[in-house]
Image 1: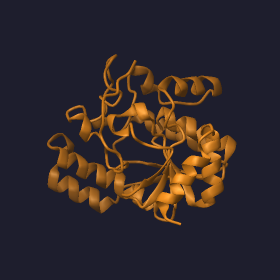
Image 2: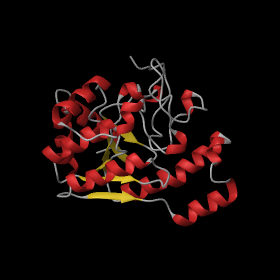
Image 3: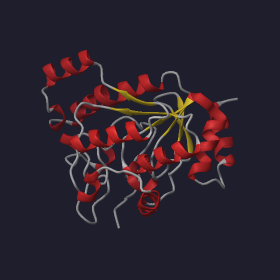
Image 4: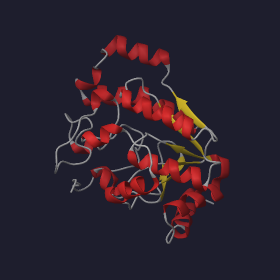
Length: 246
């Protein structure tokens, strides 16, 4: 069966399922060939909690770029202890690639051009992600439509051309309010930076708090145009429209 046909079928099966049902469907379809990539944001903390309760057989991993906030590492440590009964892996960038990039472009190369920023993202995030997904058929993400201008057309199940995998987005139709409601109801641990205006949290040099009314991705690579604000992890996404906080 072609992947596009299977994706159509999977989206049909998921039509009346809630997020936990979508996660279970992904596990039923792919078993140990589906993994969850967490960036430790609010959405991903919700998914981690759901997976722990619904399908603990799913492996969870995160990417340590070497430039994360101290608060992110603290949350990572909490997750390792809280969810110690199932696999929680951490992937790192290739040391040689980082050293060569910094030697040639400088430690804060990303401020100088979009090309440099995307190079840094590729070395620190994209290549480690490719290693994490190398033996997988599908991966789960915390993407939501209202997160970014480039995510408005994303589906629950879709083809990730860049990685050659099926991508699963259980929270794609959720609002930020729904995310917060789940966190409160289930007492999910979250990064304390969220309470300080950091909606989307990535590497420390490339993330700032946002102001009321700003696009919720305005705090990521704020010196760039909205259509450029993807790090390469979700290259199948296209920029459209306008999305702001309310």
